Image (spheres, rainbow, N blue to C red):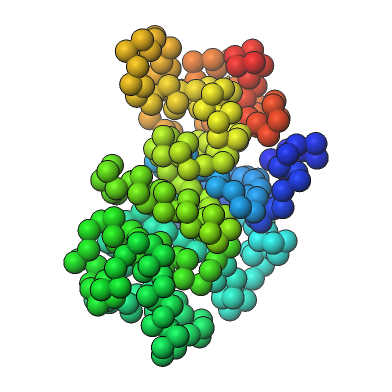
Length: 340
Ligand code: SF4
């Protein structure tokens, strides 16, 4: 299968890869009956090949249930892939056991969607932020207290928050704690899994700006997962679009939003509300039907059951990755007719 590696003459080829996914697949067994027999497989992620470059923010978008979060967790090895390789700085993480993964976990962190459920309600913010240093034996005593105060300052929280509990903070403040915990050990890579979707719109921009400032300050690399396309456009350098466990289009953010190639991406983008009274609403592409079940994905192109451009070959042949413009990759048999 063709991979999503940047061709040698593309700007990305000159950037250093931090992470490479090679045909990563994750399926979950469907169990049934008294004997808990396996009667099928849910294919959450199928044959994903993707590079993440040092210092970039790669946004992942798609409808809920398309496999975005599973992919993020497979990269971090919080869920072990069923097959394929996940290379972090050239080392295949899928070959490491939990003990061997421990030092690497310092370099790879996650910010969760719901900061309330990801923080222990019985622990003060100070203890929550001290925990990573204690687990990895990196600071104690005064140094530890200074580290925790420094973290609070970095994410814009007062040092008085040290003695507070999660329920005493607002949603935005709790997510600042979640971010502080993720950056505590100065990681290289962070998976941000819908980090602002549980927050008020007024707070979302503050958290996104904080994440961008921290990225600049610490040279972080982000995988930013979201279903809100406007949020992803705001923060991402590159965007990958996921449909039913597969990445069907990848491009630099501006290019993807200005000229989406895949019919699914076109439909997703045309559904964004545009505050322009002159906008021609007849250009909207309506996505009909629900996302098919990942337990029984459609043959050929997985989007064919909802695609207005479907032809016979789409039902039978899986489209391969093709590069159409610099760094713009799409999986569709008819891109040249439809979009170019
Ligand atoms: Fe539509 Fe066919 Fe392209 Fe799939 S391959 S997106 S069904 S035109």
